[in-house]
Amino acid sequence: MTAVTNPYAAAPVPPAADPTFTPPSLGPRFGALVIDWVLCLLASNIFADPFRDAWAPVLVLVVEYGLFLGLFAQTPGMYVTRVRCLSWTDGGRIGLLRALLRGVLLALVVPALLMDEHRRGLHDRLTGSVITPAPRA
Image: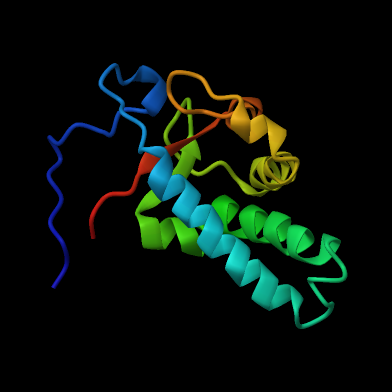
């Protein structure tokens, strides 16, 4: 059985054009980052000692963000906390290159602390992304 779509349904409005856009609170975002960090510590343990080689989990985090955000708009931590990362201007996925850049900027920590009224950190503004609530399945 195929799903029936309503041809008259309005297309989703991109966050930049939606005056009612409300970003998720910092709790789910921080929770997603903690989950992703733990996964990166576990994954980096395969090829390095993450407690001795501090670069290993950071490298895994950047790669994780690049792949998961670029392809699926969510990291595993974002999936669990029901948030996603979309393009600010069109509401679509940000793609691999922008997701990798976002991961690198996030690894620098400071850009994430400089937020605007839409809770977009400097890393979000530089990559044209925004964290939004994920729709319920």
